[in-house]
Amino acid sequence: NCRCPKPCAVHALILVIQDRIWNGEQALFVDEIGNSVSYYKLGKLMKTLCKAFDLDWHYYTPYCLRIGEATDRTLRGEPLEKTMKFVNWKSKKSAKNINHLF
Image 1: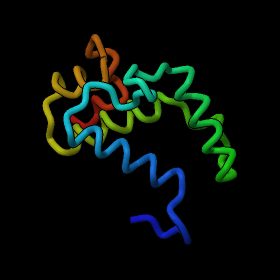
Image 2 (image 1 turned 60 degrees about the vertical axis):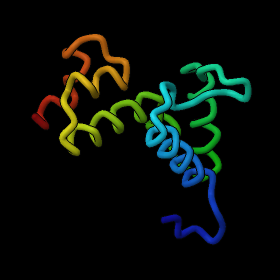
Image 3 (image 1 turned 45 degrees about the horizontal axis):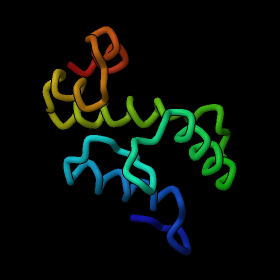
């Protein structure tokens, strides 16, 4: 739950992500006409949000969302193969950052 004085951009983005995941959408981020948002566009959005909240944007990239989602799914007990498909990893080598969770 957001403890900010008013709804903030970060928590609004989290709600959008959760809604898309729970509704089984294929792409987490889509533009106004339904196309998947590119890594570049998502990176620009994250940089803008980080600057707005005085966070060092160098630490936050679109990859943070991928590894975070993969970690959460793994901790919830989802099979690695299903997680890999969702985050679009082609090989188990790509999952090296979460392998310690198995």
